[in-house]
Image 1: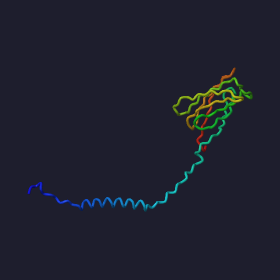
Image 2 (image 1 turned 90 degrees about the vertical axis):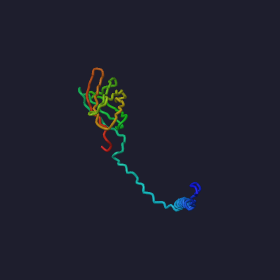
Image 3 (image 1 turned 120 degrees about the horizontal axis):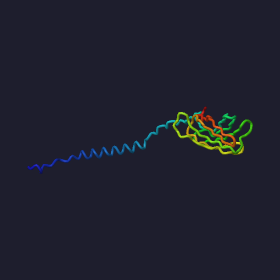
Image 4 (image 1 turned 30 degrees about the vertical axis):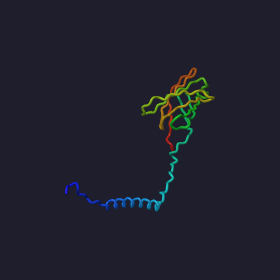
Length: 166
């Protein structure tokens, strides 16, 4: 007998065993899908917001006395980062400064490297109004220059955007 004429007997058992394993796996998949036990959902917690950290618009008063008895009083709103509107009344002694004055502001934040934020307040009835875009909470140093006929006054005031809850 030559080597090529020897046949190895087929083992039908292997194929039957493999097919049986596949069918068993498929059957178990269907049975477990039909008998799936749903676990109770974990209770969802409602997040509790700390009221101190909610940012709400507010009006913050400003008062300052500059050289030559120039008094500024007013407020800014909404007192959080972004665009804030300043309204200031300017008086020299007991008399209002009038609508011919110009109030220029240059805002910096001590300890921060940032270019100055500049604004000019325009006359509006008895107040001077303008907008300042303040980038973050904290204290700002505001250089004020008031120019009017026969008056030129410079001074410094502090404007603070307080953190919520303070």
